[in-house]
Length: 157
Ligand SMILES: Nc1nc2c(ncn2[C@@H]2O[C@H](COP(=O)(O)OP(=O)(O)O)[C@@H](O)[C@H]2O)c(=O)[nH]1
Ligand SMILES: [Mg+2]
Image 1 (cartoon, rainbow, N blue to C red):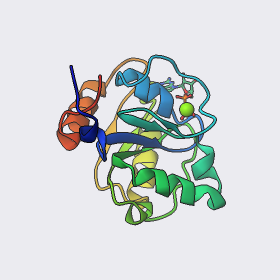
Image 2 (cartoon, helix red, strand yellow; image 1 turned 120 degrees about the horizontal axis):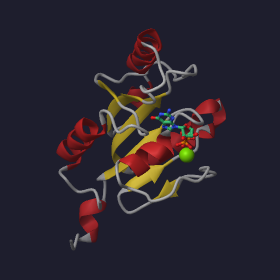
Image 3 (tube, rainbow, N blue to C red; image 1 turned 135 degrees about the vertical axis):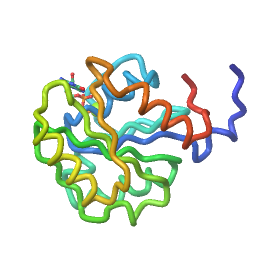
Image 4 (tube, rainbow, N blue to C red; image 1 turned 180 degrees about the vertical axis):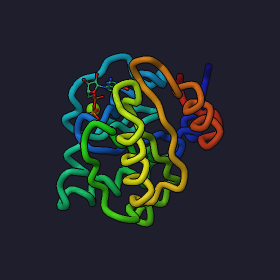
């Protein structure tokens, strides 16, 4: 489908989260990218922004994450239940775009691990948290629908 360029301004989906949280794999599961490579730098697609976990892992790189977030219409805060997620409290207040929390890897996590991740995302400022597995596909359809609702169905898939 033809999509005028201006429509993609502030319509991008950005993924943020610690290294190996599953950001790129989720973009693939959602149909934004075809291949998952180790994300070495911020990747701007026409409809998405993929980020390396390092931007969140190091305080001095937050600025870069935030600058990129301002080019997005929706930022997903990812948390991997199998590792500790270290988001600054109320990180959402520094971001103009809407924020949605996503707990990934529910196929390999226990309920209490998932609950801990949800809590971490709420502390980070995600008012709503969704749950999915990019490997089994569980929760992906619901997440995709949510994203399409927020971004107005402009997603380039
Ligand atoms: N079991 C499971 N593994 C996942 C899931 N999503 C990602 N992974 C794995 O987690 C690792 C890191 O994924 P990647 O997308 O590169 O993480 P990124 O650094 O956040 O972009 C890879 O080995 C993925 O296959 C998931 O939903 N379930
Ligand atoms: Mg990546």
